[in-house]
Length: 509
Image 1 (cartoon, helix red, strand yellow):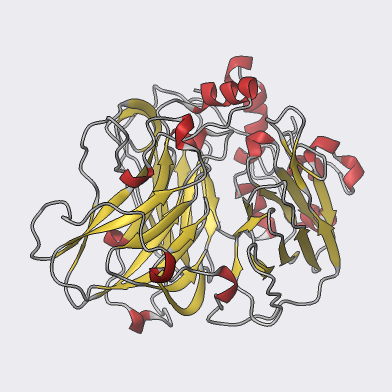
Image 2 (cartoon, rainbow, N blue to C red):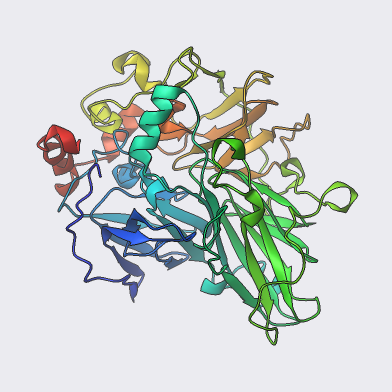
């Protein structure tokens, strides 16, 4: 496995010990054989589990996460002077190889909500290196809406692949056939066609109590449609942003998106299906995939330890469905979208080879020297970067509007902006334009029906804006090169990462 040492020791489990306002976490990245859906394969794992262990923090903490492989902390904001800890290989740092450790220092400040961590190197996180990261708020203004919010209320949803990503990517590049996952997992458990009857993960509730369920779609490429038989869900958070309560019974989640919902245990004691129906792939191209088998069990206290007797369905549909509509979500604390100072138009399309996507006819390729290092060495304009880096140099303290025009020839992509969130001015699937109280989030569906978003360049540094990184659908927002050079200084260990990486044998790079 590229940049992974199978010989790493397993003597450490997750250690989270509060030292004042510091949380120290150690993740040991290893190869381990696991069978989440009944099929045994070697995976890349944090501390030998899938999902990886929960990283738990409290508002105002500083996380110190020591790992010996490449991790990314999705949705966590970074100050300009800490941008090198943001974790994107060849954007803010170099990868690091076998027997190399690094400690990320993540001041959380006032940030709270539901996030996740994963490998950012190539497609590695599809091989298993992903887990939840929750920042709790002791003074949550919505605390009166729920009774329980703990490790038992995290719903970690993901696609799962029986083959490793290296041959899958090679096959895609050779055949132009997009891989389809073998199954969908709910909290690390699932089933596939003709596979063993593995036990589904169970989420336990007690009659009369209200639960803050934290839904995380940690997929490599798949979207999921989530519902619970006979129950509704009240959305109170979107990608870490508190929202005005909004009750639905169906939620479509793109890869990387998170929702916090309140589920009230108000049905007769029993077992109910949690439907997590995988989309984003044609099952005819992978006969292992049966989307109906993607699910968990909601079990009331006092119910038998058994599967629900109700049939497995795809969830509510037609007149029975109350779907989440992104453009109807409103932040609990409205922040009107400021007028934009600059506009970027991103047209996404696939190349003639049909294996590489591009933005404005440029397919992203990772540079040999990370973007941040180029900036520290003096890069100050778009022309200072290779065209294939698709880097946009932006001034600080401006509002940037990014427009994805509607295109019948394109498909929907879940674009994610590192280090920031954005105002969703126009959601895909709606003509509604909202500049007064639009939802703010960090993953949005772009392309297809047209999407418009805005973000502030109030943090200097290079911020990755992407989806399908390995297929070229990516760009870099390089905010304030002069300001970046003024605040980012040598840290010793970080500076050494590129020297160590460049010294690795070619087969490990």
